[in-house]
Amino acid sequence: MISGKHTRTISITSGKGGVGKTTLTANLALTFAQAGQKILIFDGDFGMANVDIFFGVKAKGHLSEVLKGEKSINDILTELYPNIYLISGGSGVTDYNQMSALERKSMLESLSELPHRFDIVLIDTAPGISDHVLHLNASTDEINVILTPDPSSIADSYALIKILHQTYKRTRFSIICNQVRDDIEGRQLFLRFQDVCDRFLSVMLEYQGSVPFDATIKKASQQQKLFMRQESATVSTKATQQVANEMLQKLSRIEPNPGLQMFWEQVVGTA
Ligand SMILES: Nc1ncnc2c1ncn2[C@@H]1O[C@H](COP(=O)(O)OP(=O)(O)O)[C@@H](O)[C@H]1O
Ligand SMILES: [Mg+2]
Image (cartoon, rainbow, N blue to C red):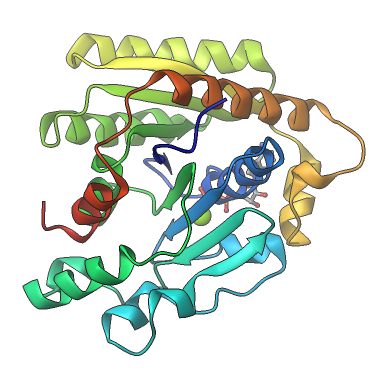
């Protein structure tokens, strides 16, 4: 179990879209909260911010509105579920690269006024290798890359890891294999990917576990529900629980970043 003394920051990211980042972010958040952790979800998929729908709650506002001075951080901090809070980056419009020094400073000041202490900040990123995605990932304690058996997934994940390594000097990555047949296929997919990375990069990959393809997950998404709230345990709910437990164990072992403030500074881009 991790202590609330430091906040750990974890990104859920991918090279390509539609691999299950948002679904996993929301369901992992629920699992962490049920294990007694206080969670802040940062919805950093500015193209399609949609974590809130799984909780049947609408984000009270977006970071872009804070930036424009229209709202305070307290106005937009949305409680999704007991012990799960959301800050949404907002859809489409926000370009953090365009922010002036003054805007960055005011954003940081408002973020430092967040009223709660969180055990884990879980970041759902957009897919790909845009500056913003790279920036968000580079700021976190733990980067989780979601890999699927789709042939383009390996190439796209490789491209993401390569640039995070070469430009942002990240060396450790956790890999979650999603939409696999079973954990055997998950491990094989991981080994294949590790093999490619080992040949060209000096990075360390860790297998964080797998979640099988499960039609009930898709159905839950369509109904805007959390699949982890299903009444009976399925193979996929057990697998997700296991991924969450392993993550908690790992988080208790790693040295967290110097502080959440530093994390926000990196996100906003002053570091
Ligand atoms: N393990 C899984 N089994 C079946 N469907 C899944 C699984 N994981 C995700 N999905 C489905 O894939 C689609 C994309 O998921 P989403 O979380 O929105 O991806 P992303 O955020 O990476 O774009 C959704 O319809 C979701 O229900
Ligand atoms: Mg998404």
